[in-house]
Length: 152
Image (tube, rainbow, N blue to C red):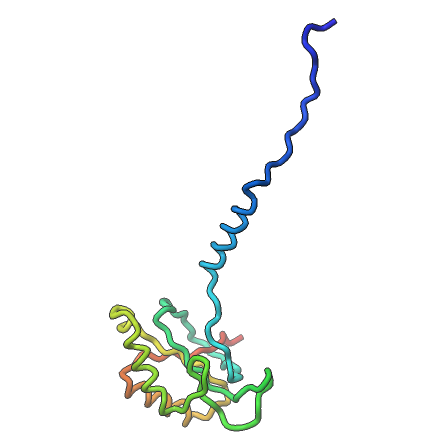
């Protein structure tokens, strides 16, 4: 007979008391680091293709101007091309005022790097793009970037 009793060892159950804390911590982490889209597109544009493309380096100092056909419930409306700044339609004459206000809101070091990215439909009349560029020139915003996709 053995002096020592052999006991059956069982694996203890998993303690789930701290699991809600872990889940909420991960949830808050993703809420903080996720970049939400700020602009709801109200114009439809098909980006032209280009050959000599470069990427923007500092996207916090970039303002976007969209030029294309107006959209109603996801479908492009036949009609004249529109300019969209933020979430509203604008006339080319409103661009100067908007860019001046945008420049005032930026930090001084970002004002030097401020770039305007024009995302225009490939069939947009050049007179509309030129009038937007003239307004940008009047607002002393001289760094302009045109969005395009890589040519195949």
